[in-house]
Length: 85
Ligand SMILES: [Zn+2]
Image (cartoon, rainbow, N blue to C red; front, side):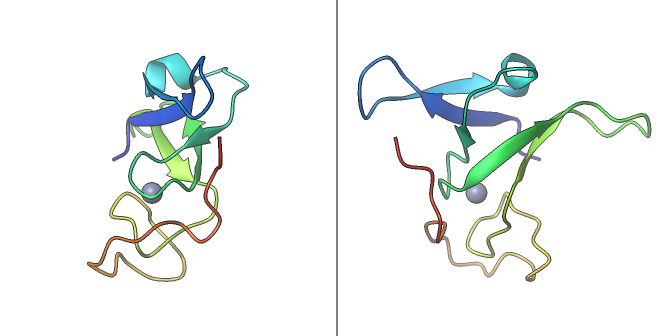
């Protein structure tokens, strides 16, 4: 389960790592540290699932993405629509 993500840092081109606890309620754009696809934070759910990030648009080239397009392909690749700085 993905519990960290990257947000834009102070300097152009710089990314900062934040945890899921820091991300809840933060209005910034967040990306997956692995495939650079956009992710969004989910709070801990009532059924006990821990707080975590999910990809907005799934990507089979990322082990952290659970995609309707299919399971992880086993070959990491950049997201087709990555978050740019
Ligand atoms: Zn990813």
